[in-house]
Length: 179
Image (cartoon, rainbow, N blue to C red):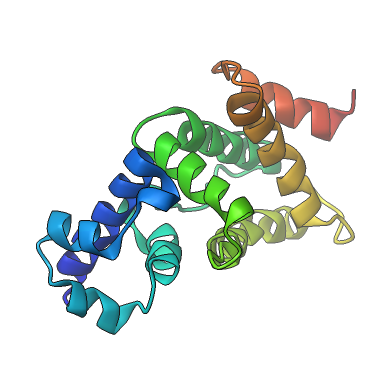
């Protein structure tokens, strides 16, 4: 399948899940919005869960590159700022909340590849910090990421509170400098 057409399918998938939730997402709706026959979609993805899982990893709207600011602190602040944008700015906010939230109620929707892909990219931040002598090798990168990203999720999604511009720097400082 042509990459451009694949992106159109993924974009249609994410727009639909953002508008109608996982329960309202249908392959037929994606086919209609993307201008592709539903049999073509089923040829590549056997279910709406598989289609949404692929869209989460491959869609441009949720694209991600790990920051490289030259320091662990700078990289983590930039990373948290990216999570903040993902969860608070359209169109990614409604997509992320609807799609990732659906995984809690729908075990057939496997979001582990989404998080594995992100973590594989984020891991370089920690590898660079170890090489620069800013971080001990014994530090668990996943724990650090869970603490920082979890803080944004908790505030933005679960508590429904604003996430101010200075939140990323404050969260990173609380973690790196201690309370």
